Image (cartoon, rainbow, N blue to C red):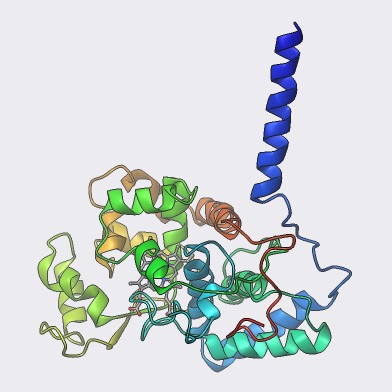
Length: 320
Ligand code: HEM
């Protein structure tokens, strides 16, 4: 009796500790008294950036993903290189590819004007990602806040943590699993590729060498992506061939028709365990939307710095 109640108390204490140290400190009302105009300030900056260039919504969404996958959502992707570290901007998945840093600077200065020294850059990325999705016609959700910013960044960690477009289905599943994201989360989050663009270097092998691709689609893409490595590497093509600035479930319809642009995209519908989920999302925008939101909230929960860890950067590009 005594030992079983000890076990119960110990289990409870462990759970409380565990939950407290993971994500319990993030909350949707974190800045409601310290920066009451935060959400409207960010939204109007995001809307103005997207009205100048619709692709910017995709670029901002991807920044939050690349931030969270590298040592957690801590704003590390925003740090410029210094004499003591090489940052993430020049890591392979980001070089000549990650964009929107000037827009983040604009968001940060508008927020600093309203509430100096209060809101982290990591939280600004999370809010900007949500506002981008909403502005392009996708679902909305309440963003959990209270992340703090890292003081350093790691090019090596960015190279090893962000999945490459050559990934197999098993690789994709295990990369996401390692961060606490399920296969379902992974397939739903990949639906982000319903917006934005990719460079020829990232889809060349798929359109020339893979056989699980619609041949007329491959031919069209080959028209602006030469076979020779080094030629036209930065030429762009839309990840969703029809509507790259509208957030809906067309990505999955493309996959079912073997019109995924990246090798990794088509892996999600290639005779494996995720085919049925891709079909489900292709037929039900509401199921996709609700799983996408679940996935975004889980992704935003990856290893935040909270409490007295990290700092609130004044300038998102450098530690204070
Ligand atoms: C499943 C594994 C994933 C792989 C292998 C992958 C890979 C890629 C690649 C190679 C590009 C093109 C980059 C370039 O050519 O410059 C890209 C673009 C993009 N990715 Fe992913 N991605 C994945 C998951 C995600 C997730 C989870 C999100 C967001 C939650 C996301 C959001 C985006 C967006 C929005 C773009 C377009 C960005 C722009 O136009 O600026 N991706 N991704």
